[in-house]
Image (cartoon, rainbow, N blue to C red; front, side):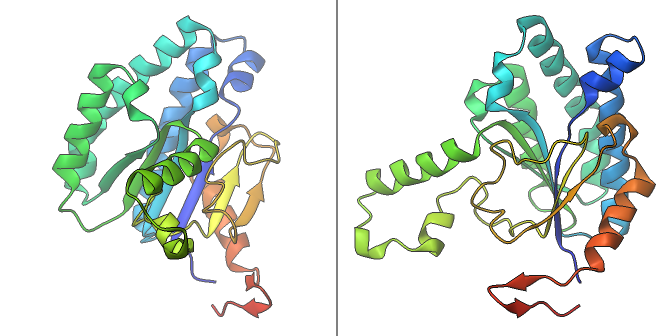
Length: 231
């Protein structure tokens, strides 16, 4: 099957660090290296879109020191990779309750989105301070505030109010570390997605494992209510 959009739930950074007797933040740092690796493969494979579940709304409940360290790591990543990815024709987009993020991170996100908006290559989306349920609730609230009449509401209308408006639904959702759930990620958009679960912890999920996941997907028959997608 053709594949256009892969979404990834990056899980297992903390466990990876614990298994090696390292601080949790070291697991997150190693995880960032895998992000770069997967982005490069996605560009090579000419994917249209790649989405990372970077920081969930629930992640705000983690210890303050860890949250602060994650925000610093995110800031460093955006500063260091922005120009390189823009030069590679990547389009960057962040989805979620971005206003909850530190001001400096918000500024970097805005800069990245602005610099890359005219690019035409891989659409790289980072779900930050993100909740799938909240996304749907906010879409409904915004429709109500715009006086959308009930008879006008359909799937296409609701999708236009989601954070992901204009982004194709994921064909494949990958989750690492052995967990087998969505954890509030792209609840609406995943209705017909294929899933790939692996026991591999995210810092160990590199190029070859990503390519293997794509190949497995391409060997499946994707059905939409009985219709089979042709490769």
